[in-house]
Amino acid sequence: MGEHLEKTSIQWHPGFYGAAELELISNKDVLAFQREYNLGKEPLRMDLLIIKKLTDIRVENEIGHIFKKYNVVEYKSPEDGLSIDDYFKTIGYACLYKGAGSMVNQIPEEELTISIFRDTYPRELFEALVKSGRTIEERYPGIYYVFGNVLFDTQIIVTSRLKGTDHCSLRILSRNPEKEDIKAFIEGTRWLQDPGDKDNVDAVLQVSIAANESLYREVRRDFSMCEALKELMKDVIDAEVAERVAAKVAEASVKARTDGWAEGIEEGRVQGIEQGIEQGIEQGRAQGKAEGMEEGSENAMLSAIMNLMDTTKWTAEQAMDAIKVPQADRSRYAAML
Image 1 (cartoon, rainbow, N blue to C red):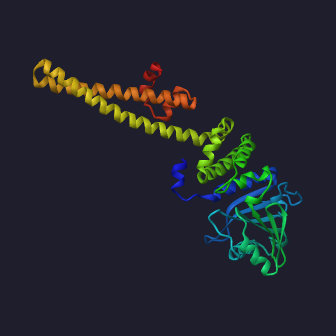
Image 2 (cartoon, rainbow, N blue to C red; image 1 turned 90 degrees about the vertical axis):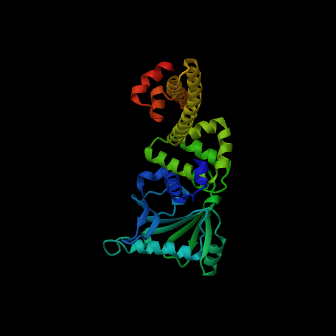
Image 3 (spheres, rainbow, N blue to C red; image 1 turned 120 degrees about the vertical axis):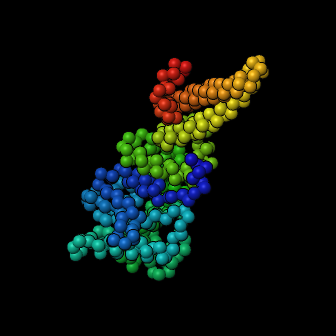
């Protein structure tokens, strides 16, 4: 999986959506997450809209302390810049959303906030904001509030500077995360049972692994971490194992056929010489080829089933399902295991 993803552009946003929901998991019952919220009929949309369903509840995570009822979120991947124009574009999203209500002032400006996320410190943006008369306050480590001449309460989150295990889901969405953050994320999320939470964990891990394959290889060397990672990404790993085994089966089958042909030809020649007639040679070749192909394919398939059972601890039936063994042949292979 990693080798393939390294050759393509990494899609960071799905990982961020999952991380955002995991960050705010303590209050997920009072928050509604709407990804890529459309701001009209045209394809203009904000990254994430978080609606706080109970306005009198304070979100536990520091990132959500600024939240009011309506919260516009913009995410910049490690490849993206964050300039003063990006800042105003996000304000524009919030303004469009405020003006899109079905009635006048349905979305009050005092009930709307802006949050912008980025992996690295946006020095040029902060300098531009200060130069324009605004002030920047680091309210919590990595969480900066913008004051003065702002339409809506605004914060800028520098994920690499966030502190504490509560934020490791965001910190591992990076090109150079700390190994300890990866381990903390794996240990902290492996017990989640809700399907939506598990999907978010998978989304974060798939992006983080794609961006840091060598680092995850180091993490896998730790036995306990390896087991936890396998548990978290069981479905993905099982699919990859089945795909690799199927490829090995196809390769082994081709080799078995080739070897069978060679053996069959030789056997046919010997039999033909012994019989002393051309017809015997042809019959021997045909019979030898058929027997060699059948025996070679059968041995390759049996070996693939046994390897898959040993690797994944599956039953024989699950292994044969994975490599698509015909139903008519299954009882014969089961008897040979």
